[in-house]
Image (cartoon, rainbow, N blue to C red):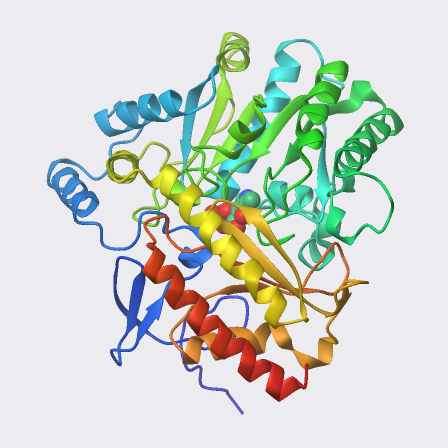
Length: 445
Ligand code: PLP
């Protein structure tokens, strides 16, 4: 018997969600008129909120002029302006910008630039890009090779060359007697050991999310980790790539998260909040010296049709202007501290919240059956789906994952748009309490 599809469209699963009608500020509305507070900015995308009038006006103005001009035929003002605005906001030296249409393309671009740089400086033996486990770097095969999460990589292993992994610093699970500082160094040294094991002359780059995203649930390493990683990369002439697809564009309370630790990476991937959902847009930002070597050696053998699309770049310019006008990087920091404190306070009420972590408005909490041992809740409880559904019913969107370094573990990202106010944070917390009370009663937690 033929099954008649409910829809011709498909994504990962048969998950059925409400039909989106419109969105404004931090709220989305479905076609029945129900309102949802966007507690995860979609997938940590809608940093400046929905339907921002100035961004829409800038996009309309660009639409009236030109929506496409192929980059090999024309330069365009929005792309030039956005490249300049981006470079002005990045740490010193990161001033060459290459546009793409999303996060995976940005990550692919970083490793292809790194490889061509190695060739340009006669270090063609370098090709391995070490990444962390767990991590998420995107859906294209190059990015999958870097991603540290077996269910996403295993099906494709015959089709790609998986890259070496080092453990992500899941320090909150460690039960050793080390200080935070020493734990950070312990995890950094794991990179050094891996480089030596691989043969330093074969290692091209190390890529990391400065604050973890969906893979680890807003994992922040101890401060000591960041500087030591930079030193180790320098010691072996290895490029340091920051995947700031989720953390960039103000999400953590700095334009890019690397600023928090005063580390300047060699290459950075940006997307998500960069055009904040107004257009599919991402960027690779690289040190000028790297780009010059590659261009001198014959050019960057890489590109996408929509790179530097004028409409997407006009949206990007307007988003960055709105971020400045509304002081959103600072607001992410202030409101992030506030929301983190409120989530932290829930730990007193719910013994099954094992950890609250993150930076700025990239925050997460994790559910456990025992806080002391951080034992996860039994998988059969399906807590990560249940809590999301309870929140949906109450008009709140949160983002859940059931992974923790290859172990089981339910974590929930709470990452509202950076325009959030104190009152709206209150609204999130009141709704979460209602959801957690209901879940605790249902599951006898
Ligand atoms: N890198 C990180 C850190 C991400 O969080 C994501 C998406 O979630 C990506 C890369 C891939 O971005 P995209 O889905 O836009 O291709």
